[in-house]
Length: 290
Image (cartoon, rainbow, N blue to C red; front, side, top):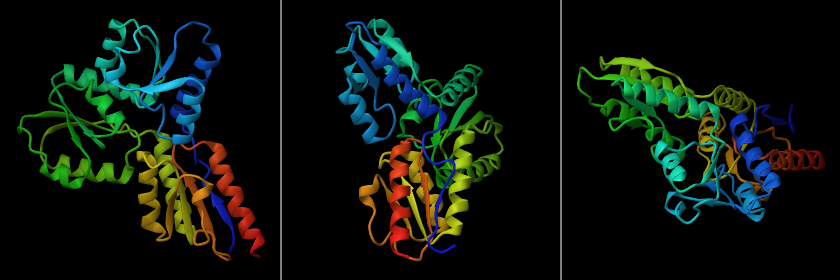
C-alpha cells in the first residue's frame, strides 16, 4: 500500500547487546563500594548509549588504561576480549564483570579447543573489529582472518593444513557461504562451524524482505556499528534508495516523500526509543501528506 511504513520485527537490540547494556546499568545501580566502574571499550557501538553510561559513571577504557584502573571494576563488552585482558585484569586486582555475548564466548571456546588440537583457525570477518580481535586472542599464533572472497582466493596454507572455519557473529550469511565454498575447493582438511548468530541471520533476512517491498529503506544505527553497515549493504542491493541514519535528526524530505512506501530496520546496537522515534516520525509525515 502506498504511503505505508514497514518496520522490521527484529530491528534493534539483540539478546547479547541487551544483556551487556543491562549489566552495566545494574552494576551502576548496585555498586555500593568505593570502586569505580569502567567498560572495556564502548560497551556497544552506539554513541547515545555510551554517552549516557559515561554520564552515569561508567567510563570506557582500553588495554593501555588497565594499570590506571587497578583495583576497580571492569565490565567486558558484548564483543568479548582476548585471554590476555583477563590475565592482566587479574594481576591488577581488577574485578571483572563479564558481559561477553554467550554466542561470542562460544567462539572463544571453539578457538581455544581447536588451536590446542593443532588446527589452524580461519576467522571469516573484519580483522579490525573488536569481536574478531577478541577471538584472535584465543585462537593461537597461526590464526587467519578473511573478510571477503578475494582474500579467500588468496589463502595459501600448506596442503596438509588442518583448518577450522568460524565467523564473526554478525557476518553476512550469504557472503560467509561464498567464502567457505572458495576455501573448500583448496583441498584442506577443513571443519566449518557457522558461528553467525541466529539473531543476525533473522535480522538480515527480514531486512532484505522489507527492502524488496519498499521505495525507500531506512537503516538505523551508529556509524561504527559493523552489523548495521552489513544491513545497509543488504538493503541497498534490493532498494536503491536506502539511507543509513543514526537518529531521527538525519531524516529529510527525500527520505519521506509522500506516496512512497518506507521500510525501516536497525542494527543490533540501536536502542528501541531511537527506532520508535524514527518510525512514529515517518508515520506522522506520511499521514500529513495524504
